[in-house]
Length: 97
Image (tube, rainbow, N blue to C red; front, side):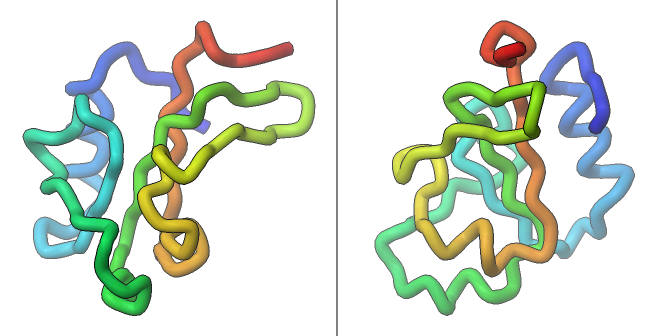
């Protein structure tokens, strides 16, 4: 877990920790200028080379580490299983204790 103060800090973390040619996908609009939009109407096997998938869940639970992700956030249900790494960007205001 890493605490950040803004979207630019997240972008810098990605730049510092992932190769420039790594395939990174996200459904988070705030990262749209760094992470290109992906069409999720294609076959899930086309996601096989995803290095990092970033999601922003509706909310998360501190006690057990659970996060609530619906289809509109995931884009494709296969993506969390196919991606090499997954990052959840959780707003403190949506963290339940």
